[in-house]
Image (tube, rainbow, N blue to C red; front, side, top):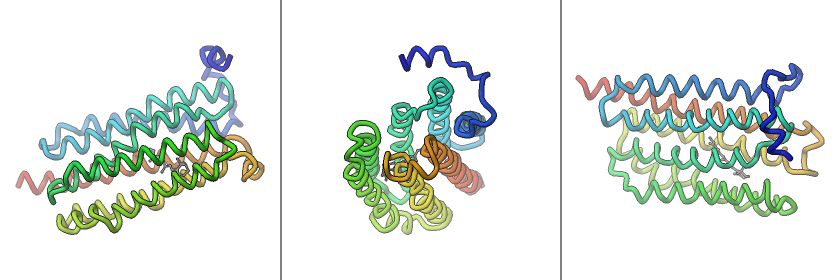
Length: 244
Ligand SMILES: *C/C=C(C)/C=C/C=C(C)/C=C/C1=C(C)CCCC1(C)C
């Protein structure tokens, strides 16, 4: 039934007071614009930096496609598109881990570091999905496991081997790494807050249904586009150095 309604969704009937739907709509546009920006800029970079900027574009592009579906889903049935949401994250968050690896490669980062970050990000997301969609009455337990994996990622990039590589690389790479670390510590922290807002019986009564989506949509815009721009800015700087 849900999916039948989805087929009949008419995005032209966006209710002006539907602020949740509005954030899905703007989110889709912003992700599309960012993707166009990253992809169209590719030619200006040499090979070494092109891959990093390409990955920034892939992250926002994958999100743009998912936002397109999530927007329709919300318009059709006014419920959280949790499944699409997590499919999006499980593709894009590992790509963010790849970005850390790519910028630290000059200092000798090994693929093992990338796989470790990817593994923990997948654990974080799969357990989060269990708590949000499958075993909702155990939301606290699954949220805690997910949170532990999240903190491991934070530890690894702020203090662990990724940090050491960033220090070894120094200069612009160290600076960019620092900013990306802040994205993960502060920007990513919005997600567990959204999770708590969406868990029945916790805070749903405060902001109402859909507040979890507003939190996730704002967080995605900050983290996917902002994160991509940090990589872009680093590539612009390093590219100049390499050309000279
Ligand atoms: C582009 C999408 C991004 C950067 C998504 C990040 C998602 C998280 C950091 C989610 C974290 C969660 C917890 C730490 C605990 C509760 C469950 C989650 C999955 C919301």
